[in-house]
Length: 350
Image (cartoon, rainbow, N blue to C red):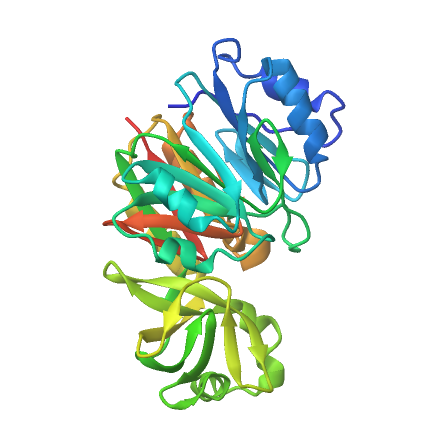
């Protein structure tokens, strides 16, 4: 499916050459996927890798870190290059042209990437039906400062990128949050705005459930919380990105919410992340082409875990795996795509 990966060192002046020369199939490759941290100069890296590969198209963009057979790396000058010798069927559109992307994908399977700091795409994937889409919102650093896209022959921002690939033979989603409340009903709200829950202002309902005051909630506690939507016998997690004291409402990072919908309050859980990942890995084989899209919030540096959950995945899958850390994750189960937070999306081809 794809061939190799390589992690760059921050002090390497020949970074792009190193990235290419450690690819044993570089000469026969027809296109590639390139991901790099926000510390890179994206145009320089992109141009150099393309030049060394003979101007072959490259797709991908910024990431918060990479996962390779050699290890898990983030916070520096990481980059990942995957090469393919099959034909490439891809499309890059302005981020506002959401329907155009879905029409082009049709019933095919596609990897989809977009710019997290670009135009909102909240309703794009929630409105898709009977489509198999996996992918990510691309982000270059944990501070939400940088993002960029690699779109074949150019570096861009605010783009929707899709690459048609055969559907994975095995795919699983692991979750990093657990429900901590009974089901709640959204009694006012739309899209990413939740105004009231069970007839109460949403913020007041949240404070009552937690037994906390608003000042404490605005600290580190808020980064642990999300609202969960029912999804394939479990809950998809959508982080609470902002509190509005004046309107007493909640603004969510992902997800499409409607009045009358049932949700639960969720909290990040390191133990649950590990348990769910271990359970999902049982269905996967070793040393088979695999790609892992993991939430940046699941890294040890962000979550406070004593070990990297991605190390478990890397060690289990072996030498044919690669992955990135993202700002939000896209996955489809039973033809129902969902953009989520704190999830890991693992795909394998055999």
